[in-house]
Length: 288
Image 1: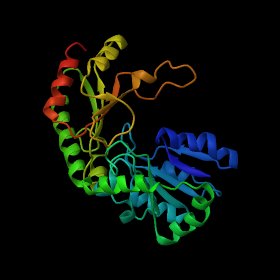
Image 2 (image 1 turned 135 degrees about the horizontal axis):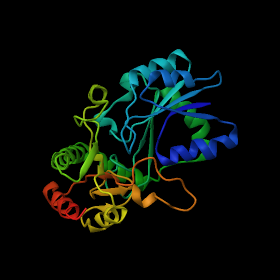
Image 3 (image 1 turned 30 degrees about the vertical axis):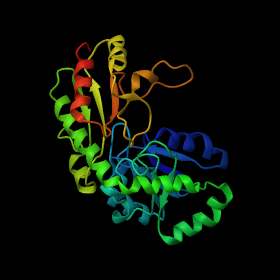
Image 4 (image 1 turned 90 degrees about the horizontal axis):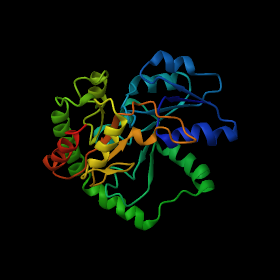
């Protein structure tokens, strides 16, 4: 049994709900902002506490030190997806988390040309995983891809700082715009867990989300299509600025509507001139 904070990355959800049940592994999703909820979900057969802090759409945080202590008290392995922050902006091991995973596809590689996962843990954990799951399942990075990630790591501090500063610039413009209802960003003054975020994180990088003020889905769709300097795509961490508009996932046959409002957009701010990006946003919002 796995206890997992609610609303993790979509393919983490798929792993827990579709793949692992085939092998008898159960799961419980909990509100990770409430330690009582987490502890109440632990069962006699629970083995793992899985965190994602911040998560990657609305950026809820979990108290890493408290979660690590809870996991140790119950004999659980604690795991966190640390892709939002990268190792430069958050170090979960310092709070006692056992295993840290990263989508190295994003900030660590930083050029949108490699798909790679990273797992960090103690030598004992890594040895155990290497001798069982890794050798059985064979998820091994090709040498050329590894070289590309090393290339990306050399510029990680510069790239992350640029994305972080540009995101803050755009948020400063958006927060006072009449067409903006709400901003989700861990270091924003309106963020409910601001104190916790600043205690655990040194920065936020380029991801934030916005709920726009509009009563028309057609206008929202038009706004998305008017943007010329943001690509509509998943992922983040490369040069290009990206958006994920939830309206694109509404009323899709065979899938549930997302929990976020249809006027909700996640932004990733890349390495372009932020003034140039703001010109595009301001123009597109003019008819929203």
